[in-house]
Image 1 (cartoon, rainbow, N blue to C red):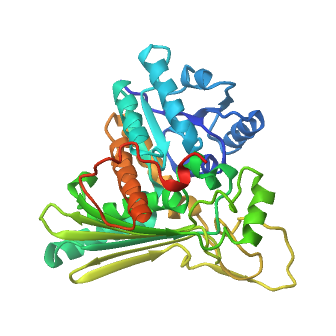
Image 2 (cartoon, rainbow, N blue to C red; image 1 turned 90 degrees about the vertical axis):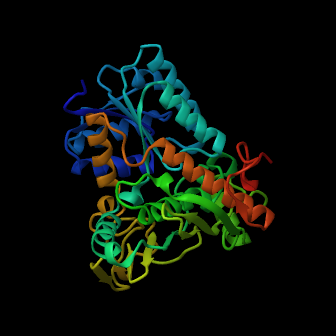
Length: 410
């Protein structure tokens, strides 16, 4: 019998963990009872923030085992860096199957893994441990996506027919943490980091309500990647100075631009397409997510920077740099859009509400590790297409252990 309140333990305490933490203010029946990360200072400050937000009491744990085996933790949110997740999942599996942990659910931040083999192992380990599992793909749960899909499929599709094109792009000026810029740790560059959002939200919009994402059968993928900004000497030197000597874009760059096209066959045998784009080279107000859905007699579009709220600050207004108006904010003066509730607009609040409710009821979420595996398969097909300059067809052959060019050891 599941509890009436989900007690969550966080594995990771960085930027994305804080986004999830803030979003939980809008989620019922959830408390944050523990956190582990290698940095004592970070986990201590995370615990304090959880207390201040009224989500605790949150105990900072000195080891992963201490968190996973804590008596007051029911579910785990894996929000650690990409290269640490497979080892974390192995430890969770170990402690749950040995009976040391009573954790019954696990959620993992996107992307699920860096390779198809890793993603398949994440799924195997969670299933073998009997865990309910959720793939944390926030854009699927964006308030605009949820409302737009509901309207299109209820009002337009019955008389107009199924949609046939989903366009999705995400752009900003670059990640916060050094490991994101290191292809071997992150698993790639902008394609791995951001196209995972675009292909999955595209699949979601093209999938009928209550249909599994796998009902769209992938047929082929074509993609291209580029280094547009951060390999230029001025910016490569900036990265080295600000992100550390391990980030060397003069010799070990990852792509900062990617574009891909995925062809699917829908359940009616019709061709449908996801067009996806990602960039770390965008200079604008801040993070920009653009989505479109097109069908025979209708369309919808969504742009996170068209929030309806703007402020203007003249050059006489002074202040330090920050991200108080929009994530990845690029300016402190001029006419700027403001996102008053980023956690909801980007999807984190509805995502975590859905995961908590699903875990408490003991039912699979609408995004599981199986969906995360499907996303990684599409990403690896895109990287392979970009590497060989050709279309990659499904079913995939020889890509189980494929590693993108920029993620291979030096």
